Length: 383
Image (tube, rainbow, N blue to C red; front, top):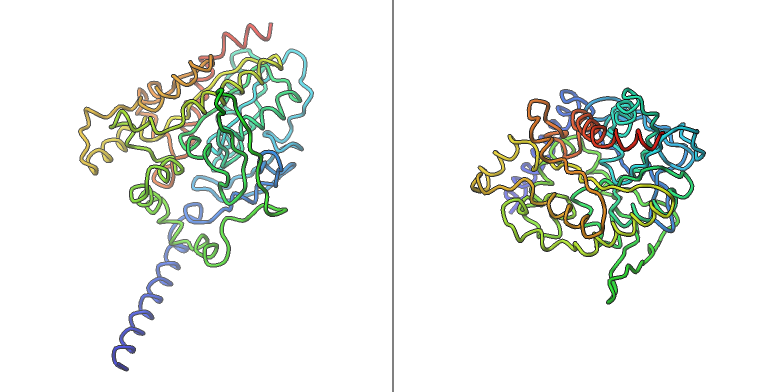
C-alpha cells in the first residue's frame, strides 16, 4: 500500500511539474494576446431593465490577439467616446445594436465596422455619424430594450440590428454570462410579454469565482480554450451548441434550424422596427457572417472531420431563416454570406483559430458591403 501511494504521489507530482512547465512555456513563448484573460464583465455595469450595459465613460486598455486595444465609451456607454445625444445639422446618424460582434472588443475601435462604415460613407460625400450601441453578451431581447432607451434620445435616421447565431440561445435564458437578464415570450395572441431581470446582487458578477476564476487566468487553458469550446459543443446537446453559436448541423440537416424559436425572433424584429419608425428612423437587419458560412478552408475541414458530404453543405441555411423571419416582420434584410464567400482571397474573416469573432478583414468587408447598400439611401436622407 505504501508503494502504491508513493507511486501515485510521484504521478501527481510529475503532472503538476509538467503543468507548471507548460504554463511557463506558454507565457514565455506565446504572444500575450493569445492567452491573457480579459474578463468582459469588467466593461459592464448592472442595469435593472437590461441586465447589464457598458460602463459609462469607460477608458481601459487590454491585450488582444492582434493588438493592444484601448476601449472607450461615452457618458451613456456608447461608442465612440465623443458622441453626444444632440445631432449636428446635415448629418445622417446611424445606430447599430447587437452583441460582441458589434462591439469588436479585440480590435482597435478605428478598425471596427461601425468606424470603417463612417469613414467609407464620408469618402463618398455623405456626412455620416455611426454610433456603436453594441454590448457584449447581448441577445435579441436585450438589444430591443436598449433601442427603446437610446433611439428616442439620440434620434438616428437609421437603426441597424446586427444578429449573431448565439442570439437564438440567449433569447431563451433568464441568466447569461453569470448575470440576470430579461426575457420575452409570446402569449396566446402572439404578443410579446416581458419578464424583467431577477437581480440577486447589487453588482456585476465576475466571470467565475474561486477555482473557476483561477483556471480562467491560466495561460495554458486560455490557449486551449477554442478547442475546449468545440469539444463542449460536440458533446453537449442542441441547447449547448446554440448558446455557443456553434450550430453547424443547420448547414447539413435542413430541419435542424426548426428548433430555433423563429416566431419569437420575428416578433422581436417587428418591435424593433416599430421603435425605429415611431422615432422617425428607418430600420434594417443584418446577420453577422459565421465562419462556417463564409470561410471555405474551415468548411472543408469540418465536413471531412465529420464525414459530411461537401456537396450537401448549405452555407445559406441559417441566413435564409433569418431573412424569412425579417420578411415576416416586414423588415429590410441585407444578406452578407454570398458577398463574403466570393472574396476568399481577402480572408480569413474571423479571429481563427482563437474564436469566431470578426477579424479586421471581416470588419472591413462588412463595412464595404453596408456602404454599397446604404449610400444612395443615405445621400437622399442628407438632402
